[in-house]
Image 1 (cartoon, rainbow, N blue to C red):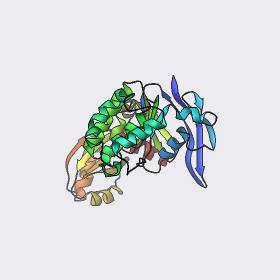
Image 2 (tube, helix red, strand yellow):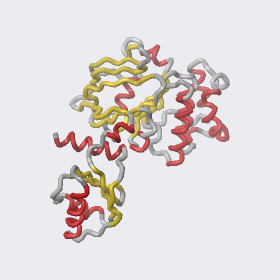
Image 3 (cartoon, rainbow, N blue to C red):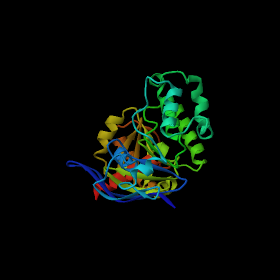
Image 4 (cartoon, rainbow, N blue to C red):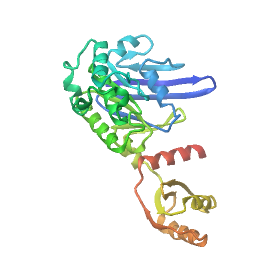
Length: 307
């Protein structure tokens, strides 16, 4: 059963169209990811779903209730971790948690079962002001505060942005634990690697969902043949690729170049390597690889631009 249902959602800020007819459903018990770059419309979507912002048009149901008529009732049963740190920096870790528990007429002791995996990491710092925590610990405290009233549905808007890789990994391990406690999660992220940790994802670009499915299904739908090669002069190679005579898409990937070909590689690769050699390019480790969600996102957005 759908715990979130959105149909033809629109939102504009003056002449800027932040959301352009979005429709999707989130099922009970799943981790659903909204994946896209900065400015794609993720925060606007989350502000609407958490009843902080009204849409211009469209139908939105959260927990089987209308966000316009039943917003006060919805707020009782959702948890929200916004994109910016919004706790009280001068209060200690424990004081912040007590404050949020009191707001919901609850207590730390009453809901220790749900926050215990996070609290075990936070408790050594319980007397430290929240503003003096590391980025990863701040997000764990914010997650604790969002969970302290045992919500049915949890909204996380870019919860790991600016957090170190180890803390990011720990945060997602915590989310899997939360899911096992029958809490549905809607999470947004600009990190494509985090998309594979969700049950289903929606790729958001310029206010529109351009693809919705499970991460593996999106990867399986990749249409081209992906090749990678390593170079120490990526900028020179990118400039040369503008003159590439073959039907392909290309983009930098660190010190590597990713190239998507739409022809048989046994035919095209020898010709492509000759093109590179004729133009005095120094490269190595050229090989076909399996695409990631990021490669799929780039392929889909490139196709859209070419329509």
